[in-house]
Image (cartoon, rainbow, N blue to C red):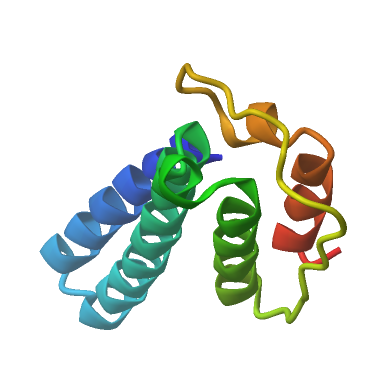
Amino acid sequence: MVTQSLYRITLYAEAASSMLEAGKVDRAAEHLRALQETSLEVLREIRLLIFELHPPVLEREGRVAALQARLEMVEARGGVQAQLLVEGSEQIPLPVKRVGFGSFCPAAQPRLDLSSRGL
């Protein structure tokens, strides 16, 4: 997804440049708006990838807080509202190595992925 979006950014920039050279300012402005939107999408995706590689809250506050932070991120990104319900305690030891989000809570990852897509 990120790679394709970065490629689209390049295409929009080239198209805007060509339109400006041809004196088609309105078309260039359209391409620049699309470039801006795509750039913001890429920024959100990269931030999410960084978080998934190692959520900082995981080591500081544990799995429940990390899940809550991820859920809030999904809510903000997708415009959905959700609630995290936790039963029991957080007695499962955390992995010592830095791992992806799905590794520290594999049961939650598919549900968060679906919710981030608005499903």
